Image (cartoon, rainbow, N blue to C red):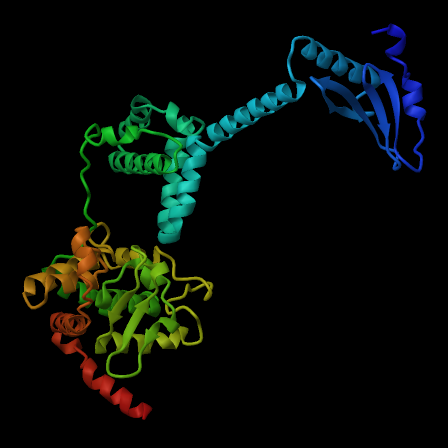
Length: 426
């Protein structure tokens, strides 16, 4: 091609080109031209032939692409044509390769352990209690992310996981190490399901850790109950704390379930009063029904003196819009002389022991009242019975049993008082 027919334009001409009513072209030679639109925008284009077909390709927009840069792109295109390559096909293949690289990079980023873990927690948290969710996050943030967080799932092997767990064991945190392994295994299981990894290295570590010795919650022995009830009767702390302790003993629910109890959850009218705890407040995310004995209703009547106008049944002393502190009942036990000897959670164990040893109640009714879920998956599916009628009788028997353990002179006839109370309401 004659050099005179190439590089006709100058940068000054390109810059000073003014728009017209209709778009027009300014040729630079070799098929390249500047297309000037009526709105003033300027585009580099080049025409060329593949066989008998004419093709047009964009080279960029001025001034982002200068005249010099446009000519360099023209030279590259001409070199491709000389080699028998189709510039459009080359550009298409280049774009596909870039997309593959971006996709690979995206998959790599999606498979990073910390990112996958947070996604897993977000999806699982809908069926977890707030406390459990905090505990799970704390495990990963404090013990696992520092070592594994930035690695891709496929890059993490059994030795790296074992290193994290051994570090916990070296601090004497054997139970935490077992929980960490279980949670890491769950994250990898989620990764396999979502196609982010193929193997679960944490599974093979089940037998590698020091067997954990579960320390049972301190609980009162059945023979210790009479003395405990006597001390509770003369408790000198806040009256609402005393009533909460009595209510906990009568219902043997979990501490968090009692602390967040709301008056709207109680159905106190009629022959079968009941407390219905919604699923979102239960450990197993399943609605729980607590039949209320006459003695429990009496306690609630006394509680009304403190919180009848509030949403919460057992509000905090400083702020009625917040629940009673989780340490309030524990410190009350300390004041009563039961430091390291009893916990409110231990009331559940004490009640379970006495109810089972009485031989009066079906074991499944006791387990259901404790809000336990059968570990046998098949049995859990088919055993839908709530044993509600039996549980009503059982909860009244339990309350009556506690009365028989009290000092005789201090026994209150709750049933008689309840009938009197109901009569006055009429």
